[in-house]
Length: 235
Ligand SMILES: [Zn+2]
Ligand SMILES: [Zn+2]
Image (cartoon, rainbow, N blue to C red):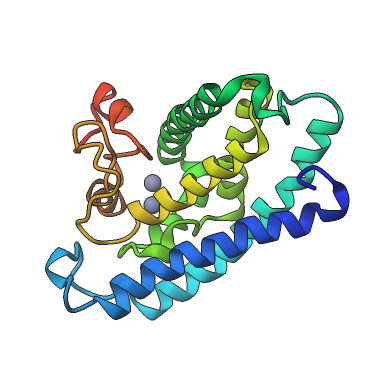
């Protein structure tokens, strides 16, 4: 079913759109509606996101999710032409490798994100596209995938790097892409809260990314702060 053309768009829409609406929707409901007053002391920007910002985020997120959903066709094309290292029996490499492959995807993605993000800030013709994401001056769960379509395509560049290099099981890909969604919503939550408790020494937090939306030239990372610390862009 995963790599069958008949179901590909349906699978893509189900996985990307529903999953994002569920994760961002729950986070928004908890932090911006239900527990808003209770957690106000943890809010990084005391103002609520403006209506115009939310409207723009929902529109750009919709186009990003459409691009992500249709990328399933590309995955099928690569798979059918033998470009990928996708495997279907977990026993082929065992369960330890299954979890290791997820960790490898996260580390590779963090590196790809840091450098592509930093380049988008440094090159004016690319910043024209990335500035759409920075229109979210007051990040909230709906800012997570609010990208210009060109940035959405650039962000997908990690997929061939992973699929052509690392043997991955489709379930590992689903776990990884769910983690991408969860973590993106977390760093845009707009509250000083912890997630996963890896510790701020190695982890990129919601507070760090909020600072990135305000100051632009620091904290380019996604999950970790390694690259920011090595390249002296950590704040
Ligand atoms: Zn952001
Ligand atoms: Zn940026």
